[in-house]
Every structure is written in C-alpha cells, then in structure tokens.
Image (tube, rainbow, N blue to C red; front, side):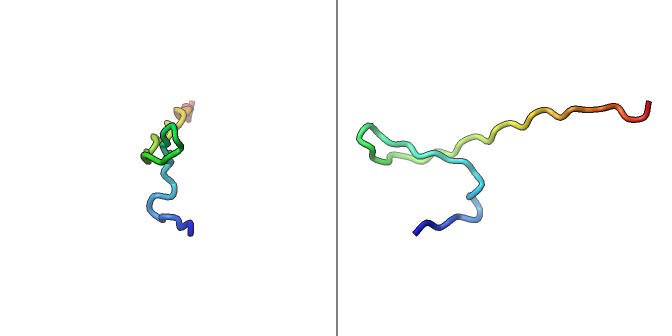
Length: 44
C-alpha cells in the first residue's frame, strides 16, 4: 500500500541503491533556488 505523508509529500527525495540493486539509503534533496525577482520602478 502506497500512502503519502501529508507533512513531507512536497519535499523532493531520492533513493540510493548499491551495485546489486539493494536500497541502502534515502536522501532529501535541496529545493531549487527561485529565480531573482525583477524589480520595476514605479512612479516616475
């Protein structure tokens, strides 16, 4: 049964396997950095 965790379902993570295909670890990945916001000058 594949249940989703409501607290951690939006956090990216990866499974680490060894050369034999055995699961050896789970690693949380960094979220991508958002692009910088473009600022515009208002009121000229």
